[in-house]
Image 1 (cartoon, rainbow, N blue to C red):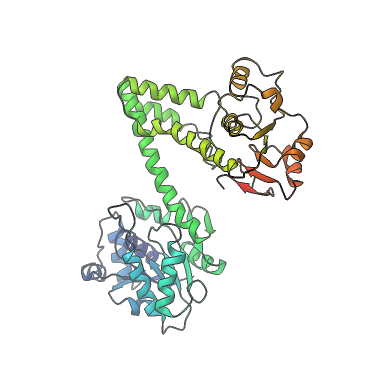
Image 2: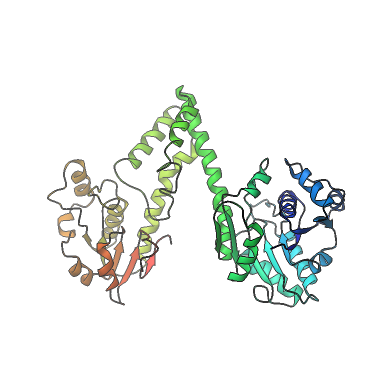
Length: 437
């Protein structure tokens, strides 16, 4: 389906989007307050430097599919969809300047005031969660006299374009994400990208806004992690690229979705110990590795938050379903749940633990030593009958997704508080609260 589109902002994202959408057969008018940028497009030239964009602009201007104007209201009246691609520059304190977004929302609203045909407004500018629903919707509604999200379609469609490869990124996206007020608006926006590669994802406005920031934060973390590993390797005389080439070959755990689901703090006999050893080694070499140094600190902060979350319930009898550091093992070494239980006991809570994998008579070696050191009265804390334990508890803390817990949790009384640290499979019905979800 071909659409008439007004693209607001002829900067990097706007120009690339306008040129690529025109190339896909849509009729596009670029809108900008800069006469110079408008003149560039009108003359068939790109106002930005980016591979292939100049050719796309020239070809589509000649074909009559791409034009530019400074008249925002006229562009809105002549189009079916407005794409907001103006800048949101960072201010001195790190906050975003939304003046351009607000101004454009007002301009679009003014153009819609006397327009009787349906119209969809799509924000593509990078904005923090809640911006489209609150600020953009309010400006649109006030200026147009129509309710944004009901009488005017409203959506957020983040861009994932890299400078130097923006055209390829547009035409071969890893994913296309649209957050919308309603399914019809979401489908209308997704139709702009029909036939392109990658999954097409519709969601709510705030999730779509947040995804862009999560992507960029992850990319920044990856670059910094690679550079810190490189610094340490260089100091040791090790080829950092060989190390990372080997690292990247693991697509099951390293370069994958593994360990990226929000849950709770890590523990066990490997991760805490090895991180401590690596960062200690770096300090001996006089290296400052802020990301690696703060992994353990961030992990500890989750343990503190988790403890406070349970304590906030103000109930005394707390049952842990699971105490090992992860499901399917009896390894309690540096389990975050052992530390949480220890802190709760210190705060006067009456704690009981049910874990089918942890049997005191079978726990040996350093695993047993850790457990007895951190919880000296563990024999009095461990219980063997889950049904009786659940009946006893005021607060039930679920630490793993063990299927054995589902039945008893489903039958939990309304006066009991159930707190989940591990998010179950999406198709499992879960009652009560989750820690990070």
